[in-house]
Image (cartoon, rainbow, N blue to C red):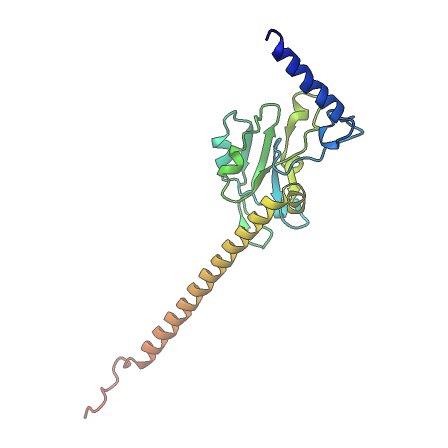
Length: 211
């Protein structure tokens, strides 16, 4: 029938219009910024760097391996590796980024930097209110501006953060067990060498049973 599709479309529109007055799930207007919709856990906007502990500089997970810089499609990540090492969160000397900048005016939020990072050091933020009057310097974020705590990561991506922490804990446990086993093996070898050295006859001493 001529116009049947138009009639069906108008009926669907009328049904949604009436339903929006009685069902919160069908409300179509949010009076932003006074009203806000909770951000979905899997939302992603721009990357940020994770640090552990109270000090962002000491706890930064990034070791300036530059993998993310090389793999970034729009080349919006700029990293300079430090010439020295600093103690990390657990006290281990580690290379760190002397400079780590992300130009969010170029970033395409592809998340490739997150996928290639072997240290779980860079993740995607959900913060989107980043408008500024400075289109160049204001959108070039440095290491201090990018650094956010692991607690913040848990607040925006709790499921993912819990999985990452569990995996890092398992890796740390395995590394500690491996180091402990290597130390025990080295101590056992040293004891065996010392025992063999003590049992060996000294040069110039008469052999047992000799005249």
